[in-house]
Amino acid sequence: MRVSRAQAVENRENVINVASRLFREHGFDGIGLKDLMKGAGLTQGAFYKQFASKEDLAAQASRRAFESVSHRWSDALAAAPEDPFTAAVAFYLSAEHCDETPDGCPIAALGTDAARQGSTVRASFEEGIRERLDNLRRLMGADESAGAEDAAMAALSTMVGALILSRVVNDPDLSKRFLDAAAASLTRDRG
Image (cartoon, rainbow, N blue to C red; front, side, top):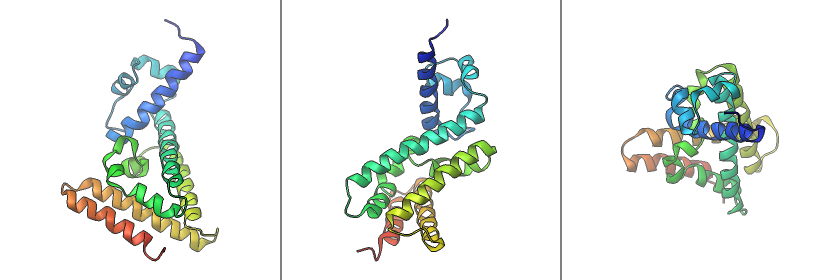
């Protein structure tokens, strides 16, 4: 059965959205095309009409994951315009964000997986990371100097590392302590 162009575009967007969530939940290699397409309500055969390869889909799904988190990040900042950096840290290092791997930060969910992927996927991650660094630098009220960029790199590294560590451990108290310690370290002396 042929589908209209509009339906094909809608199906493609749905596959990218579903893949964005499923890759963050299972990893790039943790879910096959059959299950991925089933999650999107389509057959595996439809995949090859829309994407050049699984890597092509992984790169597009990664971009979509960064877009999704950027929207959520913006919402958190809008709720606290008086101190957007602290709001960003509080959002990122929250227990809720820790618990929502399929909708959370793609760097924390897929960073090590992305490092083992092809250049197309790594390029989508690099683009998302550079955007996040630029956002953090601005939120910190920093200029465009190398020192300001280094501070944003340290902040992002601290945030991602704390989120990963908090997700890895079984002990909920230890998990919370990783998040709290990182948040305190990042926001100390900002008042």
